[in-house]
Amino acid sequence: MSTQFKLVDDKAIIPTGMSGRRLNDQERRQFQHEFKIYMEKYFKDKLGKGVDKTKIVIWDDMLVIRGEGFLPEPEKYINKTPSGREVVRAARMQVVKQHAIDNVGYFENRLSAVAIHHAYELEPENDFWMHVIVFDRILTEKSSVD
Image (cartoon, rainbow, N blue to C red; front, top):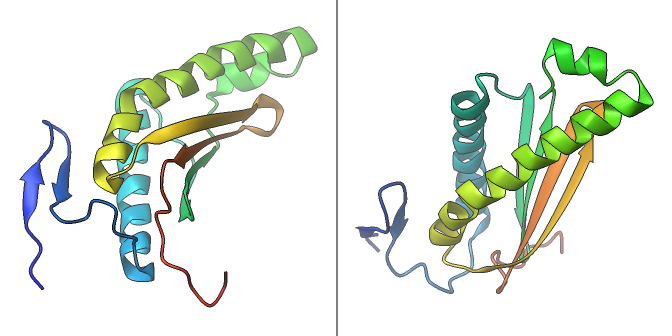
C-alpha cells in the first residue's frame, strides 16, 4: 500500500489516510524517534542548549515527553537553595508551557488526534521535566504486552 503525504502547515507533513488509524509497533517507534529529534532541535533552537537526555513514549492514548539535563550551570547553582529552587521552577515551568503552545499542534497533526489533557512535572532538584499529553483517541494497536 503506498502512502501519500499532504502538507498540513509549514512545519508538518502527515500521511493521508492516517486519520483515526492506530499505529503499529514499527510506526510507533518511528514517530517516537521523529519526535525525539524534533524536541531536541526545538530546545537547542529556543534555548541555545539541548537537553542531555530526551525520551518519547507513545502508548495507548498518550504521548509522554521526558527530558533530563536541561539546566545550565548558573541555574544549577541557583537551584541549590530552597528559594532559588522556586525561582528556577517558575522559570522552567514557563519554558515547558511555551513548548506546549509551540508544539502541541505539530503532535496533533502528525498523530491525527486532538490533545484533550495535559500534565506537567518539573523537578529542578533532579534536573528533570515531563509533559504528558492525552489525546481524544487510542493511538496504538494492542500488542502482546498490553
